[in-house]
Length: 215
Ligand SMILES: C[S@@+](CC[C@H](N)C(=O)[O-])C[C@H]1O[C@@H](n2cnc3c(N)ncnc32)[C@H](O)[C@@H]1O
Image (cartoon, rainbow, N blue to C red; front, side):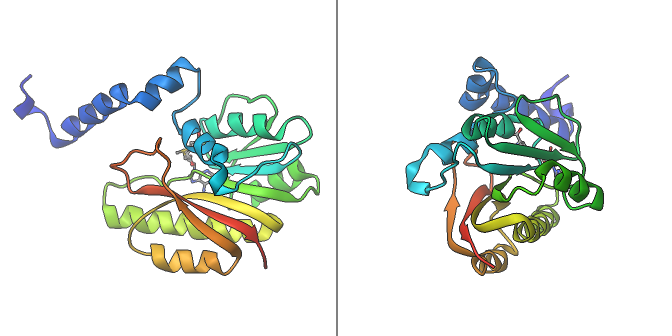
């Protein structure tokens, strides 16, 4: 079948596969047996001292939108056996050593009930979110969905974080971002924008780090 007879979406898909197959982080993830290349975005942020995001051996961390689980796998190594990592996703996951997994919408009553049971009254040191909305293909719609998810994440963090805790979340640059960042700034002492090398340059995604939570 010639190129010209392929639909626009077929061509887009095969371009995605080409990029994916040649991506050095995909190859590294396969070599190192990671569940996803997304692992490197997190470890890059955690290992870069200039970001000042330190996870202690006994930290309690909630990983929102954790499937297929590569962030949770890494987080469990940082917190050790005294710590607690709770991963939540709409999708089912294969078990991860040292991680409590919840299959639910993090914003639903069922998700929050399961979370309260898993926390057993422990205070939360860090909330991380690599969540993305389901993509419609319409840039503005996807951007508004992302900001909506960011607002839900901030609301969640305000409920669960201990004073001085931290929040790391994915967002997209675009409509609604400035207002959201201002809102974030009312609850954290310091905000940083981080674009890890493992995040594709062509993607508008980057991470917002809110340091030192206050009411
Ligand atoms: C990019 S993936 C996360 C990848 C993950 N950090 C990793 O390293 O394996 C985003 C996830 O967010 C989840 N998600 C989106 N909205 C959610 C919600 N309201 N509640 C729970 N999970 C959600 C999706 O199901 C998807 O699995």
